[in-house]
Length: 194
Image 1 (tube, rainbow, N blue to C red):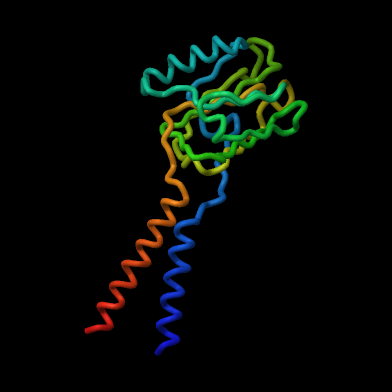
Image 2 (image 1 turned 90 degrees about the horizontal axis):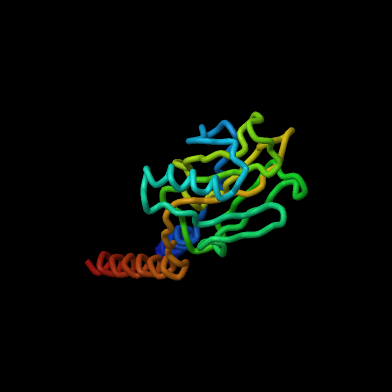
């Protein structure tokens, strides 16, 4: 009977620890065709594209702003969430793929993504930039961009738009786990007293 008590308590502790530190390592995949872009264009000037995107998103939610931007060549990150996200471009010299990971304490609500080509000729197919709604993205999953301008260009920059929200710190989750363990212990003690 003593072994059973230790075993079930140990299992509860392990379960709470796994719950507190569990994270899924899936990826949200984006290609020029999937998900279907909200809009796209052939403009090459970054300021023109930013104005078009801001105007488009203002009609959806006026609180949406550019939170993170990563440029491929030369590599540069900017925006209020530049410490929370990291982008790797593949291959480095002429990228047609990119991976964006969340490495910080913020998530993005109502997320949108702009992918821009740096070597596209105006009015040439495909478009020189895309705007995607990331409706199924939880903000934690890796964003994997693949197959952008494989023959006629390269990714110039990627930008995330939305509204920022903070993520609970691991210590908060750990405190919640210990609280649950404490409540379970009190409940067990009362159960065995009867």
